[in-house]
Structures are given as structure tokens and as C-alpha cells.
Picture 1 (cartoon, rainbow, N blue to C red):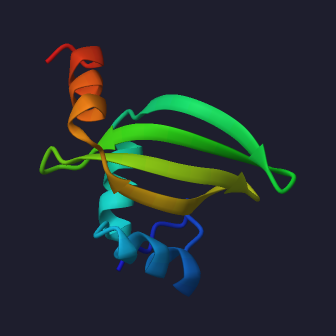
Picture 2: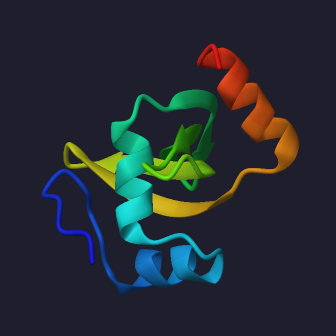
Length: 94
């Protein structure tokens, strides 16, 4: 289970990621490997970001997160579809 002090984890966001077969460790890996920010929105008076990132095993995931108290709070994550994964790798020059 992820324990990075730069991330805000609780049972709710761990469970949400698990529904999409993404682990907290994968989320943190993808965030630490130069993700590409795709979109931004304000949801319920909170800024939310959507990004694409890759895990150490090169799995491309969509990351949805917010920043609270200088920490990343994961909202959800899920495997990127083929189109988004291709976009990610093209942007990374691969």
C-alpha cells in the first residue's frame, strides 16, 4: 500500500482506484514519471486535474486528482484506452 507523504490516501480513494484495477502504487508511479496534464475542471468548488501517466511497467493510466494542503489527493484512475495511450507515447517521442 502506498505511503508517500506527498499523497493523501484514505479508504475511499483506494477503493475507487481498486474498482478500476489501479493500485495506489501505480497511481504514485505514474504521477512521478512526468505525466501529461490533459484537462482541468472545478468540481464542487475544488480544482480537479486529469492527466496521463505511465507506470514502471509502461501501463498508461488516466489520473484524476486534486491538490489539498500541498498534497496530491487521488480522485480516481483507470487504464487509458488505445487512443489516449497512443497520444501519450507520441507526446513522449516513442
